Image (cartoon, rainbow, N blue to C red):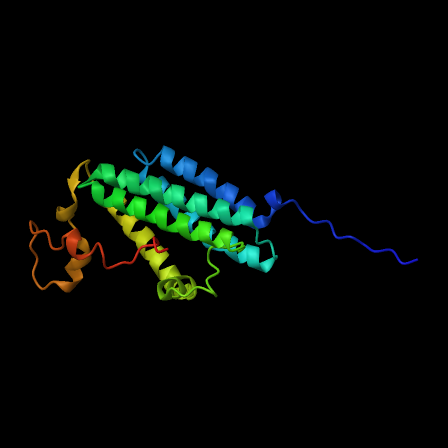
Length: 209
């Protein structure tokens, strides 16, 4: 009589992408605990966590370990880390309402997309094959474009955090002179070359639905 061998399936909580998610939570906890005293440590840990965010999706597809728990864990980790960073920026710049508005938009849009995906029986909010909204298809359906939006927004937030010298700095008077210097013909040490009003919306955010 032939015996059927059963391959041991690991618990969903021990899936490789989910373990990466636990590591990201620890890294973010350490990063934000030193965000006001050790800027370099915060930036390094935050970017490592952001890099792992892309890596866990690759492992999930590679080893067929896509799960609803993993999708929720990834979503919550992303939203909490971004929300904490935007909250910090709202304390470092005025008007802080700008960053709080971005925070609300980020959480609301992702929550609605996640909720609608689960109601339709999908395991991932990135599955938009049967969606009619062109913006959702453009964002989630084209990985390079989505990567550009996510990386662009996070890099912008980190730059704003890193160059903040004091609390309550005016958002419209952020000195980005060192970015514009290669493109200027004359040197004006006291001139604020670029205001954030002309650069803030140049990089798309990761707050699409």
